[in-house]
Amino acid sequence: MNLSLNPQGEALLEQLSPLRELLAQEDQVEKNDRLKRGCDLRKFTQSRLTEISGKGGGACLTAAFSLVQEAQARTESVLWLSSPLKPFYPPDAVKNGVDLARLPVLFLPRPQEAFLASSKLLGSGGFGLVVWDLASWKKPQQQLSIAFLGRLNAMARHHRASVLVLTDKKKTDPSLGCLVSLRLQVDAHPEHPELLEVEVIRDKRGIVGEHKQWDWRCQLPDGLPSSAPVPSPITVTSKTRMAG
Image (cartoon, rainbow, N blue to C red; front, side, top):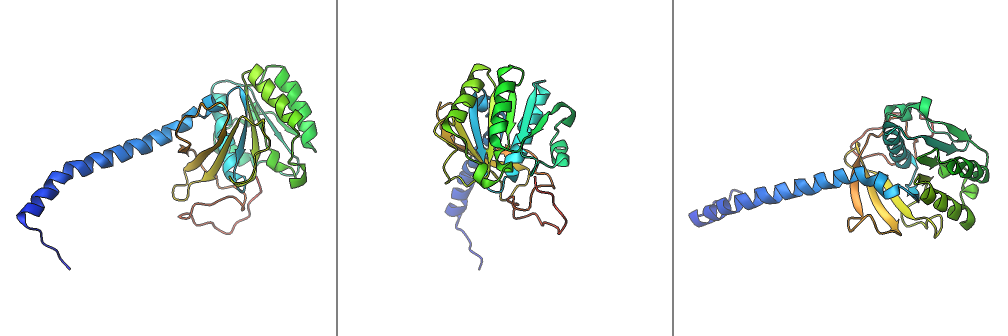
């Protein structure tokens, strides 16, 4: 059904046209501002213990790879700790710009041994970023004591390092402990595969500000584990995927 407007209605629409354009511009500015906030993650995570959680773990690995790439671009030394049973998929790291020749990876059978190794290496003051893939261990081992968390937090603050602990959980699940300074929930964007949705679950220092959610632009590699969230517009082909 076609609706015709009288001259007064057409004049009113013409007056509202600049307003619609202004609102569209403001909406675009807000979206661009949310994308820029991804660059502040280093500032948010420096000198503190940060838990990066996400269901399936794929988005967490993508976020961690991006932070590793940025740290390497600043010529910072990076350390990665993981279980030998579930290592990350190297081509994914390379696709995200990570220089594997400059990324020492320690495979340890238990998180307690990973804690001892990270404590000694953090204590040397030679690492600006330490990534602890706690989700790579079996579920019963993914619990850290208050003493462990306190020690990691203190050393991160003393050496101005970023200590990231990756966990596989929903945002409604509890954090690792009360001594986690910052917790970010990272999930794949449902519409744009190049974006990650970041939500601040906990910020004990309050430096993130009022905006607790934003989109972070980074690539989602093809080798994500099958349990990782997949954006709806993407069709997943039936090919073998290695768990990351």
